[in-house]
Structures are given as structure tokens and as C-alpha cells.
Length: 405
Image (cartoon, rainbow, N blue to C red; front, side, top):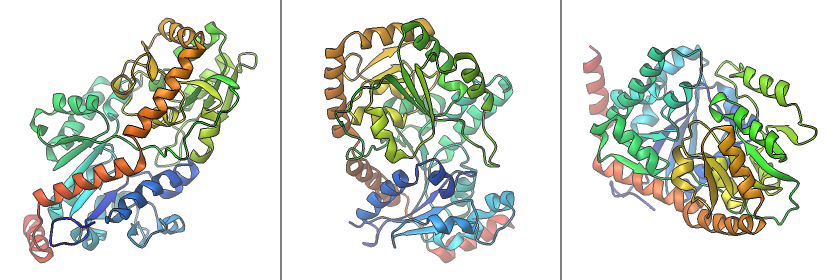
């Protein structure tokens, strides 16, 4: 497949988040999942420059395709210097691209610099609202939260197009930045429906939680509800790490484990695991539970639906806009009483669990398959390239030099 511009393949430079890397993706068990999505887009005719802010060791994890070129800090510049100058270090492949795309809003300044410098259209991927996540941290001042909101609004205003994961997010972007009207498109995350599928496994757990152990995930209220109901739960995940490799919010996991322990064998703390191992554990639970204070479009929700496992979720973000109450999952508030009532309501109805599981699988197949989502994104990026044609490389370089004088 080719785009409509000079009958050439669509070339896209994807900026990873500063602090993220292929090595980290591999350590978190996400590398295979991310590569599948990259390769699916290449199968449609896309050529990709994948820009990582890590050093030359990234080459050990290079994507297995001649249509994916890895750009990294091969000169081993100081980290902050490379973040500021990535658009200059890798100017030529960016100039040869028809679109720049980010992996998320947080950490998007390097991509914005490239957009400003080389006049290549910029598509911002917004999977979650960074500002909503930091609001729950007690050490964050109100002024810092406002700065985060202002930063996101600035990005929405400057980007050529914004790609969100749900209709809820689309409406929230437009509420924050009305000037973005006409340039926001909802394209969901994908789920590998061949990897994540019903297995007919014995149900060892009543519930399973998959995700980071963050304050915004509302895990204390969730475990209070588990304690009250007598349910069993497998907890998959741990604290994430920042760009320097330090654990983020480690006190959350420490406090939860100190307070609840294993609840006399009813809590199984499993830590992180590769994405390929998740289906077996999700299939061993009657329901996945995710009762966060704030959510974008959680991938674990899609993975559970694809496994035919219903989701107990809070009435926030992509959970509320995606789950069909009583059909593919069960919605509740974020307090322990409401969560406990939801757990009881679901676990007391085996036939309902079976019905929701069948519906969940079908819903995932129809809406979140790899091929369908990859094609939606390809068509959007090709359309952005057609609507924002770029000048020749020499002209854009000359304009950049003149603007910097």
C-alpha cells in the first residue's frame, strides 16, 4: 500500500518517550507486543524511524524488519543534551519523513522541537492524561497540576493532529482545548486476539489485577473490598521506574503489602511478567478488576475482554466508555463499599460471568484486533500527510537556519 503523495511509501518517525527504551520494554515484557504493532503497520506499506533516547545498546533490541530503522543516542551525548538535540542529530531521517508521531503526550517536547524545526506534521498519541495521574500524588502542588494541564493544552494546540484511544478522551481533549476541534481522532489500542484468547482454564482466582502499583490505581480500596468479600485475587505488576532507574511510588507497594500481606492465602503477589505469560493468568480468574481513580484506555481491560474474562471497573475514563454494564463487565464507584458490592454481584452469578465472557470476547474481536487498529492508524497518518504536504528538504533546512538567526 502507498500513500497519495508521489506514490511513495508513507514514512513516519515515531518518537518514544524520553526515559523509555527498547531495553525497558524488554524488561517489562512489552517488547514483543510493541514490535507486533510496528510490524503490522509495516505490512501495510509504512516505513518507520523509531527514535529512542537510549544509547547504542538499543541496537541489541532492534526491530526485526528492514522497514524499521532504529534511531538512538549512538554518539552517547549527555542524556539531557540528546533530548534537546535529537531533532538535529537525526535531522535527515526526520526530514525524509512525511509525519512525526509520538507514543504519548508526556515527554513530547522533543517531537514538538522536530515539528517546529523541520515543519513535518506532528500527530500526538494520547493514551492517558498525565495531569490526571499526578493529581493523586500528595506531594504534587496544585500549581504543578495546573502546569501539567497547561502543558497538555499547549500540545493539543500545536499538534497537527491528535490520536486518542476512546471517545471519552476525545471529548476531554476538546473540553481542554476547544481550538483542537476537527483534528482529534479516536483509534483504540490493539489487543493480540490470538495470544489473548479463552483457554478453558480452571479458575484458581476470583479476581486478577494487572497494572502498576500506583496510588492512582486505588489499590487500597480495591483490597479492602477483596478483604470484606472473601474473594481471592492475583496481583500482577509492581512499581515502575523513572528515567534514572529509580522506582516510582515504591511506598504504595510497601504499604499495601504491610497492611494486607497475603490475606491468609487469598492474595497472590506475582510481580511483573512478560506479556506472553499474561493470558494464562488472566484465564485463571473469573474477572479482571480495575477500580482506578483515573484511567485512559487501559490495555489490561482489552486483554481480559479478548480472553473472554469480564471486567469489574470504575466509572472513569476508558473503562466507563468501553465496558457495557452487565454485558461485558460491571461498573462501580471508587469507594470500597461500591467495589465490594460489584465483586459480590459478579461472583454470585456464574451464568452472568459466562454470558459477559462470551460477549467480551466477541466485542474484542470486532473492535480491537491488531489488523483493524493498524489499518485505522495507517489511514489516519496517510491522510495527515496528504493534508499537510512538506516542502523540499533544502527549503526547510534553509528556513530553519533563517529562523534561528
